[in-house]
Image 1 (cartoon, rainbow, N blue to C red):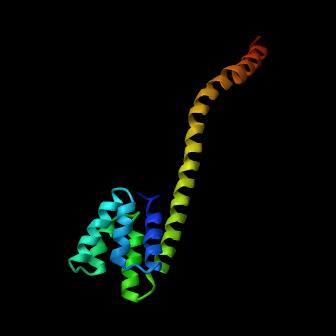
Image 2: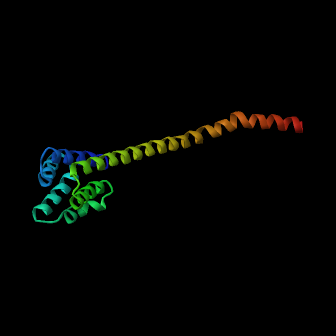
Image 3: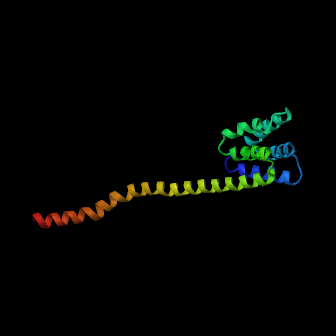
Length: 144
């Protein structure tokens, strides 16, 4: 869901920039994205259609780390009057940056984890082939 969230923000922002209202943009995006985001967008749409304010309609998204920036952008835009498409573009950029950092951290961690099995395989061989003969030769010269 973390990788899909910036795309959702971009799609909603683009639809709004093209002239759609927020409910229309959310309804269109809900049709083109996969679950679980599609069902969550439909829940937001249901709340908006029943007359809920943006904060209460999007509040369920605030608990999800991946979707929270979208909800915060919509709520901030409704309270401040800032253009929602601009706010969503900034949120999508921030989400992409966070996703990229997370992927890079996982890749670095995988490299570190891959070294441990190699060390467990090569360390005994190094000891048997490199260290033991040297110690045995040195011991035989001392005691022999």
